[in-house]
Length: 126
Length: 167
Image (cartoon, rainbow over all chains, first blue to last red; front, side, top):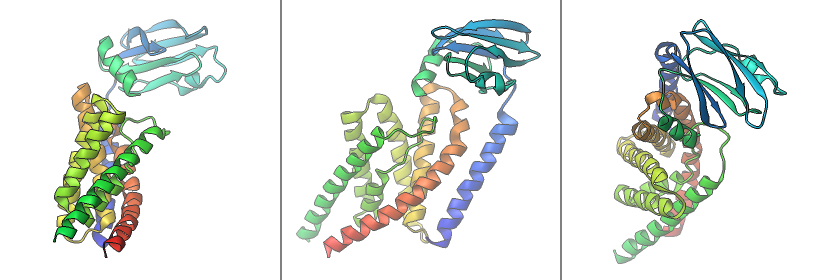
């Protein structure tokens, strides 16, 4: 390993950290829509500007109560064993998710209403 | 003269086969990181070895062959586009860095790994029309550095063996 190698590696690591901070603090904006998916299929799209409470039926039974309150979303209650989704807390930024694995429920924040096509691509990639 | 050419030709063939096997083995090992594009890049061992043992042009040819053959045998159109974007960016970056003095195989291989990941992200942004995927870039940069270091070291070992045979 030569000196320039170390400069290169250091440079890339610094670039990655800077990029991460930009993404995290500057680009990530407040979302407008919460998309609720069960087993990959979109069940509901909720606007974050309206306070609501929705009960979602999980895959093969189970219930999750999703609450929209002042531009943020959280899982108020779930009858799953681990309650990870409830502990996730409030989310509001684009790209953030609440996942309830036992019920296969995913709540994701988006910029706007999305078509089903975009979602299919997403689920293939993951 | 003729022996040298024959020798290079055979070596290119062997290393293309090696790169394909690496690509295949890599595709059946699941990686526990839920991010598209994170790969070990083991096939790059063979590509870096060709780059140093034979030459730039041959390395490009071996890389293109590897991508075509792997996609035809084990992949699909999508995986072909992703590997092509990553592979091309990676190989030309490595050639450039090798031409510039002062980098060892590790530096070249790190650049290759990082550029491979950047290429895949660009392809993903283009294919899905969503720039949100670029949020994964920092993770992919770090992953590229780590795998690049390991692959650079292994490629160095492979190169020693190849040179040992040629003497």
